[in-house]
Image (cartoon, rainbow, N blue to C red; front, side, top):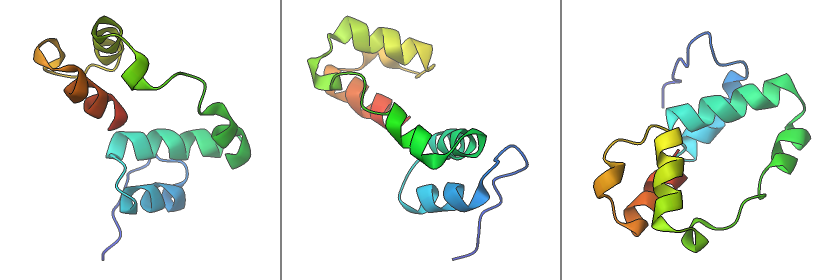
Length: 89
């Protein structure tokens, strides 16, 4: 498979490629790769897991979070669709 060019804004292209190959979106892979480049990868991994499961959130809370992430179509999404959209970010 030819290697993708993530552009100059990605600070750790190797990690970006690995995340993209695992199925992460471009935005998510770039965010993680840049966070890892700013600090150590252990620090980035330690940041995760602080919020509860999206299944435990109310639809209103999910829509609010989706608005923060600029998810389009959020006002008509079901709870399951909101959870899927947020997890893909």
